[in-house]
Image 1: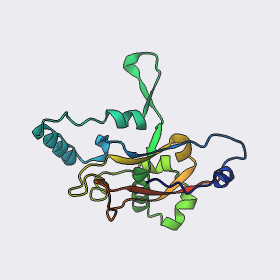
Image 2: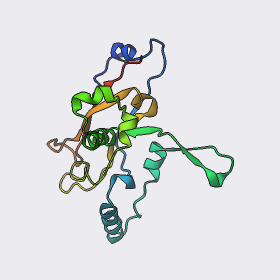
Image 3: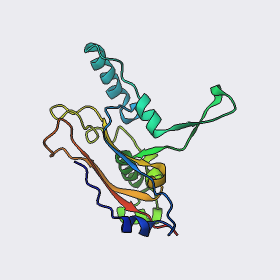
Image 4: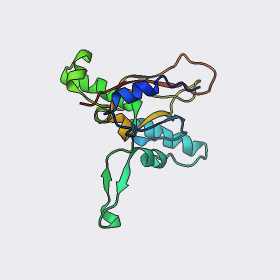
Length: 187
């Protein structure tokens, strides 16, 4: 079940007054892995498990398409990566927490620091979020395959103030990801 608790009035109030597109959210069970979500040991364990079960090797291809975009360059061999197409809200929140711990900025200082969701995601450290990130499967969670992805446009206009995997939820073989967004008013 998905509930969106943002009214059109709230969206308009954070825009610059124009009818500019604020972006979109992709969420749910994408059944896709992202190697950078895992430590080297966790990724190796995924490879071994998939080999033992005669499954295809793990791949980050789908998430790479959603999270980055290759820009057209002068030649096919020299493609440069452009800014993220989507930002993982969980990664952004954990990155903001990591930023706080590195800089000593208190949560109340985050407004003055003004890290938006795009900036905060750069501080993601999979070693620090190991026990928190896995959404599947309920009996033995070891995969992060459920996501709340914010478009780059939306992520640049908000801060992820909380994100978690709700391990108390029942009714599925996956735990849901829950994220709270705070819109940044344009100046």
